[in-house]
Length: 66
Image 1 (cartoon, rainbow, N blue to C red):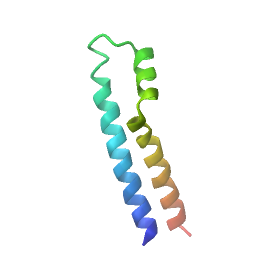
Image 2 (cartoon, rainbow, N blue to C red):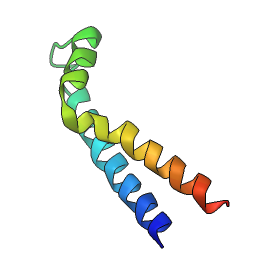
Image 3 (cartoon, rainbow, N blue to C red):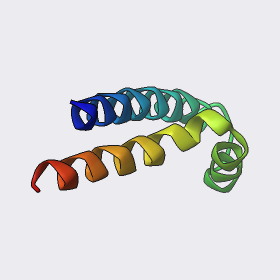
């Protein structure tokens, strides 16, 4: 049961992190360059939820196969 909880939590983190990252992509047409965009993403904690969620999903799937 905890494997499904890990999977769903990772999915939620991925959705939130991906949504925030896509939202910040709207700043690129407003004059922000790609390099500044990458620096902005690195400075925002909520953008780290996307890779953390993907790792949690991967871990949960690997544990479910055993």
